[in-house]
Amino acid sequence: MKILVANLGSTSFKYRLFDMTDERVLARGGVERIGAAASTCFVEVGGQRDEQTIAAPDHAAAVRWCLRQLTDKHCLRSPGELAAIGFKAVHAQGLTGVQRVDEAVLTAMEAYADVAPAHNPPYVAAMRLLARELPEIPLVAAFETGFHETIDRANRWYAVPRPWIEQHGIQRWGFHGASHRYIGERTAALLAKPDAKVISCHLGGSSSVCAIAGGRSRANSLGMSPQSGLPHNNRVGDFDIFALPALMRATGKGLNDILDDLATRSGLLGLSGFNDLRDIEAAAAQGNAAARDALAVFVASVRHYLGAYLLLLGGADAIVFTGGIGENSSAIRAAVCAGLDWFGIHLDGPKNAAAKGEMRIDAPASRVQLWTMPTNEEVIVARQCRELLHRASEPASGRAEQGA
Ligand code: ADP
Image (cartoon, protein in one colour):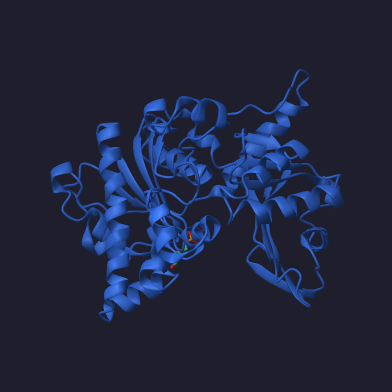
C-alpha cells in the first residue's frame, strides 16, 4: 500500500511517499510558489533531487505535477496506485481522530477557521480543491487533537459553565498529536519500557509540552486553540482574556484586530521583533535586551509545564527535545534543564553542545534520561491512514473511530 503524506502551506505543497509494507519513504518532494507565474516542482528519490519549473495555478495542479513526477520516476505505476493522501489536520468543530475527508469534515474544519486561523483556512481550501479535482484519490485527515483524547477531565477542562464544555466543546483539546505520539512511542522503544513516563518538548515555530505515560497523552500545554500554551514564533501562548477589554479601550482596536495581533504579531516575534529563534539568539548574544527577554519568557514557560508534568506523572523516565528549536538549540535545552538536580535531572554539557539527531544528552548522575530526537509526524499520519483504510475495507465499518 502506497500512501502520500501531505504538508500544505498557502502557496506550497510538500509530501513524503510511503510504501507501507515496510514504512519506507520512496520519495519526497513538492511544489513551491503555487499560484506564481513559475512554480518549482521537486522530487528526491534515493538522495537524488530533480527540479522542474512548472505552471501550477493551484494545489490541484501542483499535486498532479507531483504525481506525474512520481510515475516518471517509477515510484508509482499510476496515480491510481496511491491508496490515499493523508493530511496532518489541526482542528475541527465536533470532530477528532482520523477521518476520511468529506463535506462534513471540511465544514467542521471551516467552522473553526477562526480558532486555528493560521492552519485551517489553507488546509480547507486545498483539501476542497483536491477532493473536487482528484476524486479518485481518497483524502484522509489525521487530526492533531486525536492523540490527546486520553487526557482526563481534570487536565482537559477549563473551569467554565458546564454547557460550554458539554455542548460547545470549549476545552483543552491539545495539538501536535502526531509528533508527541511518535516521540512517546520511539522513546518507550529506546528505553525498552512500554509504560515509560515521557515528557515530550516539541519546540519549533509552534511549541508544546506533552506528558505521556504508557504511550498515552496525559496532558498537553496547548488548549482550545493552537494560540495557547508556550509562546510560539508569532502566536501568543497562554494569555489572560480579561486583558482584552482593557486593550480594546487603550488601542481603539476591535476584537478581530486584537485577535489578529495575538495570532500573528505576538509570541517571540512580539517580544523581540524577530520571528526566528536563530535571529533571537544571535541578537541576544550581541546584548539585545528585547531578544534576551523573549528567550527568558520562552524558557520560563517551558519550565512551567515541565514542572507541572513532572508532578502529574510522578517523575519521568525521559525528557525529549524535538522540533526545530528542541533539536537544534543547545542553549535553550541547557536553560530548560538548569538547576534541576533536585529532580534527578542532569544535562551533560559537552553532549548537549554536540547533539545532532537522535542522541542521549544526560550526564551519568541523571536519573531521568534526556534526549534530542527528530520527530516523524509523517510516518504516524501514514500509519493512521493505513489503519483507517483497513477498517473501511472491513464489512461492518462505520465512520472512523474518534481516538486513533
Ligand atoms: P514548525 O513548528 O513550523 O514545523 P520547526 O519545528 O521547523 O517549525 O521549527 C522552526 C524553528 O526552529 C524556528 O524558530 C527556527 O529558528 C528554529 N531553529 C531551526 N534551526 C535552529 C538552530 N540551529 N538553532 C536554533 N533554532 C533553530
